Image 1: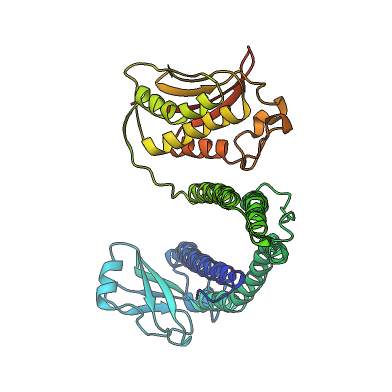
Image 2 (image 1 turned 180 degrees about the horizontal axis):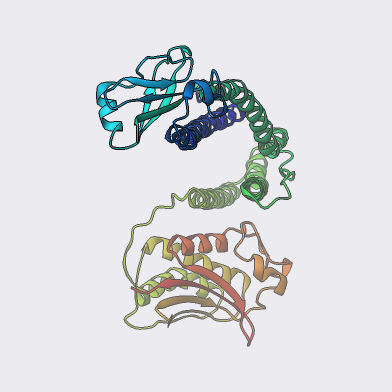
Length: 450
């Protein structure tokens, strides 16, 4: 059944439902018509019994005067005396007693309706009404052939019209299912044509605000996300290739120059140191790219533990103090006592290290590490006294490979702040950047306080 096309399955279900409805409606109509015909025949017998009773009360003869009250071949009447003998009857009946002894006994005290499979002279099923009269028991009856013929005609009409109506309804259901599925088929055909080179295209969405339209809108939104994600990945690959090409080219140049002519031990040592520096840079870029790739897959590993914020800031500052001293710049720590966060200490040190590295590389003046508690969160700030970020760059500061203008560019990979944002989001926090009112840049992470 699962291999049957959806349109045909819908049609089959619709046809089955229509068959049940038609069968139930036909049965209901048939039963109602049969009951109405039976009630009509009973009412006719009551009226006829009243007229024939008046005739019998006037000593009229059923044999001679019944033609006006009893239709020949369709109805009949019989008068039975108190001794159970037939006193009078219409011509087809003759002297045949139409009631059994029990029926005759019951009819002497009340009206009763009796069905008989056949009546002499008519040979058709009949229904009779027996009632007590002054001279005995009067029996009036009529054949049930008209009722049977009517019901037979009704059955024939149902047997012919029912399947025809079911066929027409099924065809209508098939057409209706096709019309309902046509927008989906149009979306399927368009989706079949969309490839990685044409993700800008969208599926056609019907005008009606229904489930199909909402499906189309959802799929188009998904295509938009895929297109944006693929564009980010392409840009990521292109930027990564560009970033890796520079140290590789420098490394290759250094080695080629070292092989072109004989060099002194000092020159070879300088070449090896330069190659080692470029190798370290390649290693850092590769580690950063791996970290970002893991974060995209939701696989950034975290070893959560209580972390003392003051100790964290002091540890990061101590690691960068020699570099700050070499640049003759102050590196200050302003902690917030007794502040604890549950986090991965190594990841926080990595993120704070990137923030301090960014301040030392692109800023000027003193670099300040500080922690500020705010509404159940702890903000870890790194600020400098440099020129700050260009206004148009602030909205892209944490994007991969994003760098400010040449005033702040000194050969960085553009991954430092992106890693800060990645680590913050992995801890269900956020990363932010702003320019200070007095000049300089301020970058901070917001984490939940333990």
